Length: 352
Image (cartoon, rainbow, N blue to C red; front, side, top):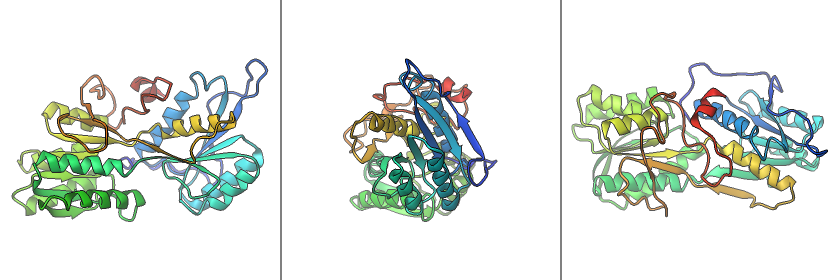
């Protein structure tokens, strides 16, 4: 759910692009697990960074000694990804990691793979196949923290702009419901304008600009977009930048810090694919993780005084620590939970 890349990456119907990260050599006579990441879409920055993270993790201990990782990208249709999963099962592998094109349409091919003895771990856009493991961000905590931050930043009273995200997307719908339930607890808060930001800079800037033009008083922005276009929209109309909640980008965090603007940044960790890899290795080793694994979203903020209501605090935004002027604005950092067990640097991801 990152901004749409200007150049959409489309590959062949089946296995037109496959990247092998580690060779099939054995260590101490032991066979490496053959694990394939099957991804349905490469048209945004988050998916591209997700693949970079899992590729880098696979080159580090303990995974480089134990895993032969292959990354396969298909066309962004359930039919193409289903055919890819079937082909992978026929070729033979130990586990398939799936970032799905559909929560339900892939189920028949996934169940066939499972019957063939293959471990299937879905992540990010998870599937409903009962035999598959699921790894995803807790999208109840994300909007709960965001909405609490916005409401408390304006002391429970004021006019807010509401970005509904991607029309029809299950994650956006869930975020919208939780957030509006929070705002209903504050009679003084009024949503004066809504728009569909579609997780992209252009629609977000246009949506904010339109609501600003129609409302002389705006006190906060609840957005499923990014900080930079919101800040641009306010500056273009010579309006003071107000408290906001946004998705994570390196450029957005730098902008919030440099402007000393009040903001809460939510991070849907790009390391979900690496967490799925770790889960698959554990299963193949005989461990029995939960079938549905929820990952706490990470938060960064310019105002640590506000209780987010999720049981843990946001990290302070600091240039040079968790955002970087010399790295790409679209970088999403951090990428992994602190307890993952493998340490990465932003430079490793950028240079991958």
